[in-house]
Image (cartoon, rainbow, N blue to C red; front, side, top):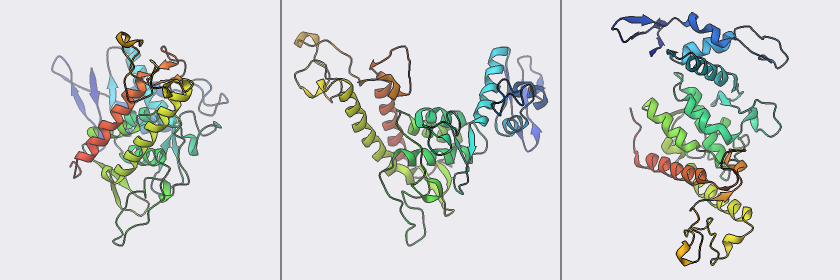
Amino acid sequence: MMISARLLGLVLLTRTGCGSFVALQPSDYRKHFVEGWPGPHDDGSGVGVVNESSFEWAVDNLPLFESSDADLNDAYYYRAKSYKSHMMRTDWVDIKHVSSEFGPSVPWGGVYGTINAAAGHHITEGRWIRDRDYTAGLIRFWIGSQNQAGESSPPGKSGVFEPGLGHFANGSRGQTGPCAYSSWILTAAVKAAAVQGNLSLGLDFHGHPVVFGDLLEDMVEWWETRSIQLRADCIIMNGDRQMNPTDANRTCLDLPPLPAASGGKDLPYCYTMADGWDAMEGSVSGDGCRPTIGAMMWSEALAIAAVANVRTPIE
């Protein structure tokens, strides 16, 4: 496998197994950015033509990649082209781009076509982008969108950023993304910070630096609110059966289900609900026990703990 990256206009070299060096030339990978049907304009125009903007963006922001597996090469550059096509330029000052799931035209999407179902994937995939403004703005947007209960906080007397301001577009809580689905946004955000080695999240609307610690209150409030919501959804899905403390199927409660030895059914300890709200419609496991939700909430709690335990940005 050979991986290289362009830095300061130079193509870096990668050592091969035989000890020599091989340069990966960007022009060799233009073929991966040829548009297929229905094309970039959904009407057949542009099919068979290289999407130059996506190609140039990928070369500038992602490492070139090549392996002996042609399918792996195709998948890598297809993901790069797809990521670029779902980046929506905003008219905001502090968040220049957001990622849509389907595009800005779907009626159930939020501002610029944002939907939280795939937000964790967007952030995780974007952690390798060289220009950190892309993921920093996306993280601020989604953490702010998840917790929509608070009000914007004006700058303090010192003019320093205060929690509640800046991670929404232009310091306003009026334009956010819909957060109806289960999504591991906090986990993805911490993964991005680990790759970048820095807890900085860019600048707020007033030009003040934002770090993860500034968003900690919103992260905690979202986790607590989401936990209650998921429990309520679970109870409704099961016809209020979990409200009966003697029922063997108590998977929505804090207590584990009754074991078979006590007259129970040895049911798994997990949320029982429709897989659609887990953003996994038509999954193999289907409706019922959704261990993915428990795993998500546990992972999000660990992400919050990681931020809470870090007192200063990683430099």
